[in-house]
Amino acid sequence: MAYRSCVEGKETLDVTNFIKRDGSSYVCQVQIGDDDETGHIYSILVSLAPAIASPPQHMELVFFVVRTNPETGEVEDLSDGRQTKPFLDNKNLRNGILGLICSVSCELLNVAKPEVVNYMTVDTNLPKKALKKYTTLCNALQTVGYTGKEVDVYLGNHMWVLQRSLA
Image (cartoon, rainbow, N blue to C red; front, side, top):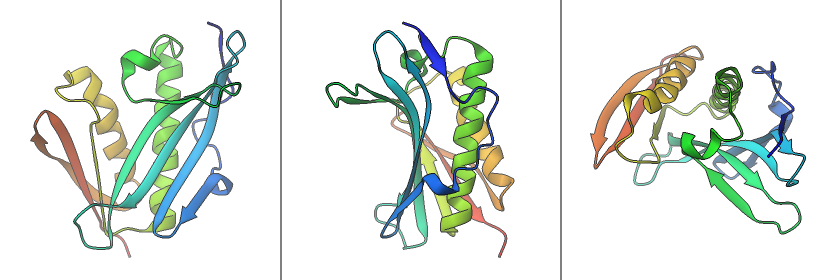
């Protein structure tokens, strides 16, 4: 596999034009690279949608890497570092993608302005090393006017909740 990044060194892209809104939900998908052997296209997808069984201004943030096969139309969500490490094979590249996810997440919050945002691990019982990206995201969201922290572990899933602290 020959992954080629198209965002290396661009952790703070202007993604405003990539944000799509559908009712009260927001999504942003940004291509991060491709594979010149398989033709697969890789992107990050970050979404912000009303949290289930919560007041209207409580939203849930979800993010992952997407692998698309343009020939078949098959789309695969990659939420586990073990799935992305084979092509995001160096730490600087992985950190850059995490920086981009943080940047996009912050921009979605700036656009939607939810009172409360939460997110959780997709996989259960993650090792501490795998939880670092979630803590990094929490720190990034605090830079755009939200305060919060990891609040709970339920059935092996970790959860973060942040509240808007700026008007």
